[in-house]
Amino acid sequence: MSDRVANPIIRKIEDTQEALDFFESVTLPEEDEKTQDIIMNFPTVYIHNWQESGDFEVYVGETNDIFRRTREHYGAASDKRAWQSKLLEKDASLFIIGHEHFNKSLTLDIENRLMHYMMSIDRVKHVYNGRGNPQSSYYPVEELDAIFRSIWRGLRRENKELFPTESSIKDSAIYKASPLHKLTKEQENARDLIIQKVKRALEKNETKQLIFIEGEAGTGKTVLNSSTFYELYCRAEEDKTELDCHLLVNHDEQITVYEQIAEKLGLTEKYGKVVSKPTSFINNHTEDDSVDVAFVDEAHLLLTQGKQSYRGQNQLQDIIDRSRVTVVMFDENQILTTEQFWEAQILEQYRKQAKDSDNYVVLEKQLRMQADPETMDWIDSFTKEGELKKIPVSSSGYSIKVFDSPELLDKEIRKKASESDSALSRVIATYDWEYNKKSEARLTKWEVLIGKWHKPWNRELESELSKKEKRAIKGLAWAEQPQTIDEVGSTFTIQGFDLNYAGIILGPSVKYRNGKIIFDPSASYNSKAVRNRTLSDGTKKKFGEMLIQHEVRVLMTRGVNGMYIYACDPELQAELIKASK
Image (cartoon, rainbow, N blue to C red; front, side, top):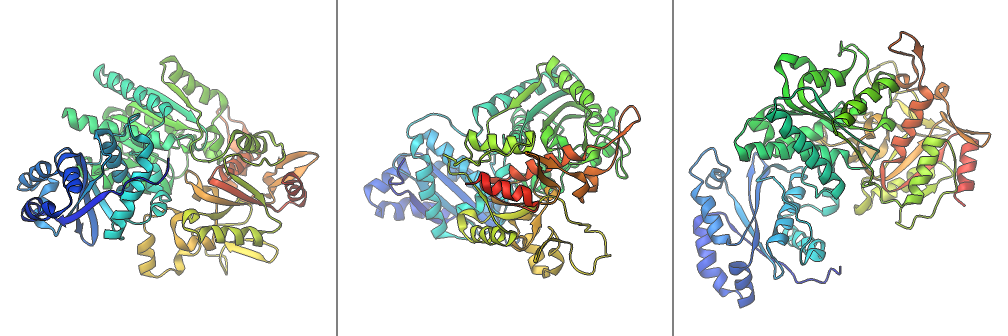
């Protein structure tokens, strides 16, 4: 669809009864007839906004009568518990947005996308009326993107702080994990199944129900997870029923993202701590104090053996025992440590438990990477079969490039990161150089060192930031922080997150011998992957080769638009160059 659509009508007024009256009776009648008609007689979208402690709070809505609806909000402002009371307390403003092609479906989609964008903005701390209602097929759905871009440009002209660039929003971790995404049909079907099963379990007082959602990296598990979690709370509020629902993830950066989403949508304020790590959840609940639903994102990161902070033996079972329904999002190919390793027969028991209750779903559609099937086959062959095929020329524009040196790879990633539409580009590497952020033994930073080229591992530069800079990056994912262009990310930092372009350094643990890719644990510094694992029968076994294979797959599935590769192993590097020609 062409961007050549009519310009939207955007009017900003003070958010008071007096200003609205003046706009309706004086300002609007001075506009041309078409503008008057669109604002008075067409559906409109609107944004109430005000500042709280220097940051913004917003309410986004759509209506068939902007004057009646706004006066209803003013009428509710006397209730101190309602968000409308802020309109009397704060210096608020109101944006009224109209378009000649607006109808009910289109305004609902514009409203949904505005909420999605605004909850992803760091300066916006609370989005009221945050429940999305995305539409499917309607006229003129093909104009949605062009009309929205035009609206956003118009809003940016009014306030660049409140309405930053689209590219910066889409690169944010909150945007990517938001429950306000428009779901694919595959995701919708999975969400409907989960909601149906949860409803039945709560009505019939069933306990220890397991719903098992399986999907590889980039198939939309996180969005499905957050969307369903939030939808259940929205429905409970509509039905005026109580719900005790928790979202769990065993990943430090992802937990921060979910906590921010819960705060921005008001869940934390209404329901308390609904987001936590599995160990914290297990320690704070018992089988006699079970919750209604536990959603587990990145369930492959759950511990399957005890450690210092966790005294149990299987976090998934402990969560099931403490929940009436447990929903897990799982990818066996992203298990990275021995303490997360699943013995095949035990994992299959859980799959079977879900399948026997028709609670098992596989997500197959690739949503992260803009890659065609040939590119995905190349990645699968490399990371699963140990085969190095000729690098395909992608019909979708996805780029795989091999660089002659880490310096050249780093230079290209820096170039990409300097461009607004690919700013989320970073160098990442296999865990093949020593890194112990808790140790003070080193004289300088822990670094990835290849010949004369070197860069610090992730999080090494934080200590050099000023207090102001540290405040600015608080809550941001590693790749979103500006100083990390001077670092190298590890799998433990980047897992679960996207990059525009991933500059991948394959360290000495990834080799090429006798026509096959070899994953060599003896060359890895990832002690969590190469140490022994005690199995259920008491025997000890190593799984380093498989876990390093998974590590490489995590790295190779981060880039949305492409990946750049350099291999330290001379034979692998030579074969990669040959495969790229």
